[in-house]
Length: 195
Image 1: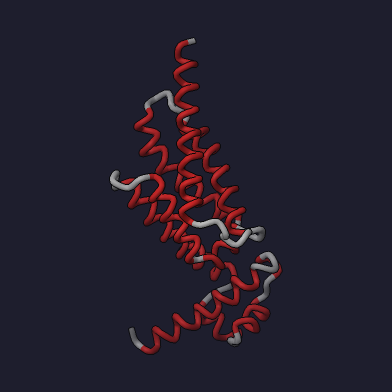
Image 2 (image 1 turned 180 degrees about the vertical axis):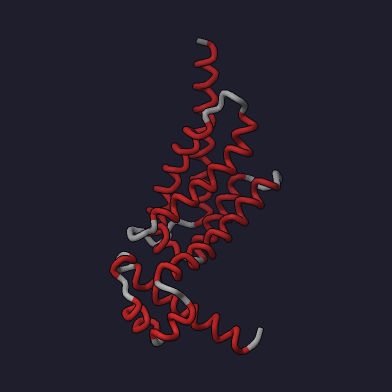
């Protein structure tokens, strides 16, 4: 990596850190470029040499997180060796390593579009894998909406409370809850089929 590339990365990291810090106390609509630059200790001209506006910075941060999560989903659904608990563990590990980013993306001042993008991505993968295995009568979208809504709520609480519960405990909890929901759904479907 050249010295110039290193400086670019360092400057962008300073902007991201300052931006995430500001987002813990106010929504994006209230953050100005001037305020962001003051927080980062960098002038406005430098900001505009990297980003068109604050929303472009947000988009870059979201894209980095989205790509990390995509990789975990792809690895899990293309490799049947992994257990569902190891999948949840890997997801939670990414959240833990990117705590400040998670506070911004999933906390009280979160970008709802980003959250919906994640949920939509997960739904496509779920329906194309688990949904196909369950057969034609499986109400995959309804089941996914129920489970993902509950998981999202649990994750948001975990993140906003400082991730005090261990990753192992959280992964095991998610696995148990989702498996219980799947077993209940299967039992209900069998009962309905008999009627």
